[in-house]
Structure formats: C-alpha cells, structure tokens
Amino acid sequence: MSDLLDELKEDLHEEQLQQFWKKYGNWVIGGVIAILGGTACGVAWQSWSTSKQSEYATAYASAISIEADRLDESVKILEDLSQKSTGFSFLAKFHMASKALRGGDKPQALKHLHAVTQMGHLDPVYRDLATLMSLYIDKDANVDAALKTLDRISGENNPWRYLALELKGLFLMKKKEFALAQATFEGLVAANLPVQAFHHRVKALAQWAKESATQSKKS
Image 1 (cartoon, rainbow, N blue to C red):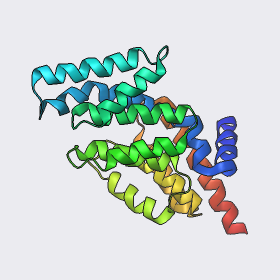
Image 2 (image 1 turned 90 degrees about the vertical axis):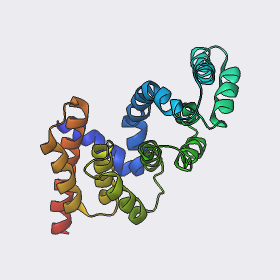
Image 3 (image 1 turned 180 degrees about the vertical axis):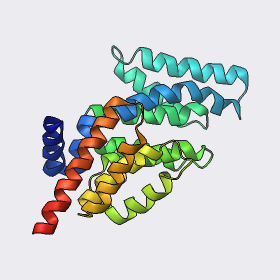
C-alpha cells in the first residue's frame, strides 16, 4: 500500500494528470474500445441497412487485423470510416485516439476525441466518454471548467460515474482542495467496486489526499 501511494504521489507531483494517465489510463481507452466494439453494431443499426452495416463492420475488422503489419493501410481504412455517419465512425475515432496516445502523440489523440464529442447524432454516453478521456489526457485543461463537466458526468445514472469521480478528485488535488478530494476518493473506496486495481488506486489516492490535507493545515 505504501509503495503504491509513493508511486502515485511521485507521478502526480511530477506532471500531474499527464503522468497519471500515462501509467494508469490506457486501461480506460483499451478496455472501452473492447466494450464499444460490442455495441457499435447496435448504434449503426439505427440508420443503416444490413448490407451497408456488414460492409463497415468488415472494413473495421480488417483495419484492426492488419494494423501490426500494414499500419498505413489500417490508418487509411479507419480514417475513411471516421468520415462516415455510421456506428463505426466514433469507434474508429476512439481507436485512432488510443493508437495516437500509445505513440505519445497527445495532441492527435485529443483531436480524435474532440471529434467524437462533436458528433451530434451520437448517443451522449459515447460523447461523455470522449470528454472524460480528453480530461484524463489534457493536464492543461481549465480546472474549474473540468470540475463542472465532471459534476455532470458523475451523475447517478451515468455509466462513467466512477471514472468521472476519480478524475474529479485528481482535479481537486490540482486545485489544492485536499479535503474535498479526500471525501471524493473515500466515497469511491466505500463504493467497493469489484475492480481490484481501481479499488487499490482510489484507496491510495484517498490516503494521499488525507496526508495533503493534514500538511496543508500545518502550513
């Protein structure tokens, strides 16, 4: 526990949210891409025929399968899909954002995610996800604006509620609102979510916020 806490404190003090995302954030994008892969077809069914849907699904699967060996061709397919108003347009954007982030190109990742947030035809749950990812990546985001957005995404019925609350706590730490951050993290610990890595992480963050609040009172 102490080792994890020291590691988190080092990461967050060094470059705030950027380092936190670099170490812990890829599971968010990677895991979400897998989840969205199972739901993309349902979104596309709302506006496309079976034959057209099959065409896009085949193209997307092809782009993913050849990515390792034929990257340029894979990117071209994904970019083409991302320009079409289909259930696979946002999925392609998420995948390109993930790839850009893994390659260290944060501005390009943010560009792809921003494009998803502007897809008015898309279910708000996916736009919220893109917004959430953008805030994880962008350590220079305006703190007050970010907190306002996170308050909305962390609503009771939002599927990204707990990730939004974790990120809210991090922005509160950045704002030096240590007591509020502590309460936010402790609320996540009390939720006792069945994801061990997440539980351990927010527990360590709660301890770090508590120590920071105590130190702040002494200074």
